[in-house]
Length: 422
Length: 148
Image (cartoon, rainbow over all chains, first blue to last red; front, side, top):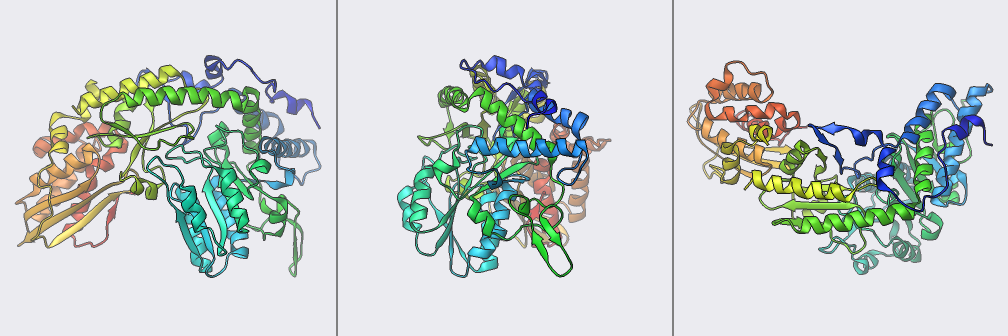
């Protein structure tokens, strides 16, 4: 399986025991640049993460030495490209601890993964009067596809509430489960609050009612060890670019027996085994769901990114990020008039907040002048903003390369914001 | 800090903290909403128009300092003006905040304080939100105006 071409752009897989954030930072070339003459403090990782050199190199390597279309070629380059593409699938399978590689479908991102499930599994399995249960902390991409499906099928969307800390009210969630519930769709980690949902309990409860469970893993995958078999979810989706891979590539994991039974999503090349004008036979998994030429370089970048994360050790990353989050939380709490939105006991990587008398948008502009990149707005979670009675928040979000010093820079930047608006 | 002060001039900060004409208008015969889905800024502009003249104007809603100060200062600038004069003023204002500045900043008076916005392209929408809503109100457009 291994060729010289493939090993060349794979990083060392030995896990580093001592997590040295400054060494890690050297892997990310963009972190050396300045913004408005100040060192970049990149705290918009929940929107997208920066890319380490091994990911950039893997993609350059592919375009420099292997570029070709996959699956149909008999020539050497096509074989190499196909092998890299399928190796990335195997890397994802191992990363998620999925039972089989064919349970891993390459999609554009979380959004496409959710839409795929809604329009294939959903159209086939959700009927009039059925219910889809989500939570109040969902991203628009885990709300709107289900609203469209409900409209198409005459089904109903139910919403499990959250408490003032931004935690799912598990009891209320369980009360909403019933014989009509066909699907539970929920974030593993909330993008706006950082809340980690008790996914194992959610899946257990849903399965008692024979409902299927889709987890939106976009914000979990860079921070937590995800084992889809231990969680026992039916579908798991995530985007590569949130975990140090390029944009435009993501993953839909589905249990094989569900994917087998689902109709295809898009028709075209690669997803068929034979075509006549009278009848078309669809390809086997996972190719049934991968119509057209895929984002080959993206899959290679994703494979390299997951290998990179593995080489750091997801537990080491999580430990480091927890320290930064705890310190950042402490520093922000010292700032008068600052209110943290989302204070769940189980939380990952997100500091969402509002500053009294200052609109988040102004906070963002002033911090940018200090070289600090954060996100401001509703974070594609308007219903959640309404729940907390704010039109928008400022959100600093963490990745493995963030430091204590950057939390100080953020706190100092926020003091500047207060001075401007004093 | 000096660059920031170009954007957040004292008059802008002052209007954002104490917006003028910040109320509903009982006698309004024109009304329009302005909405910026990007950041959630949302304003309603109320106008009383008679004989082609803006007799009274007010606004309500929430938004960033730039959008709120702009709405506040707009209401002061156009009150008593003829509707076509208000439209002209918007065009001049738009030129100034997008950096296409000729002699217009002189004619704008206090509104010239928004010239610093031209250095912050993503904030132009904040500065013009209320103006777009005013234009919609004067044209009798019932739909909410969106900046996107």
